[in-house]
Image (cartoon, rainbow, N blue to C red; front, side, top):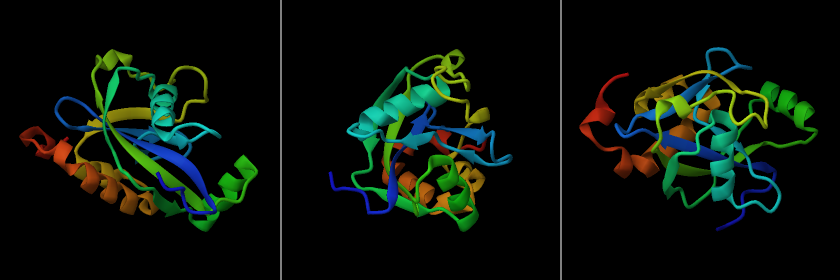
Length: 169
């Protein structure tokens, strides 16, 4: 696996799908009206796949999921200036954006398992969640993440093909 580009924070993204191939999306508490798929930083020395499983558990409480696929390369997005300033103050860093390794996981549990308080190890990030179509997950995303979401869905499209994945929310 090649290294992420210089100046970008190592991150993982999780495209969690249910048996109907709908995608888990959740609304951010800190940016009202913005929805996203789970994501989070990769700790020093941590394998991205393990980071994806950890982040999914921390943010959603989900432990019943199997990894189906991963994007073999890093996808990047740049933070808009105001976001970059806020985040870098918060993190005490100077990242241009994030380099993400994306994983596709199938949810194998019962919906009662989903808990937006997560596993209690981190501050909650999400206010509400839903299973959505691939098209809607892109529409709901903040503008600077949309190109990455489109690329991720293209990479995972063989797994997302079914009649139920084309139905509206």
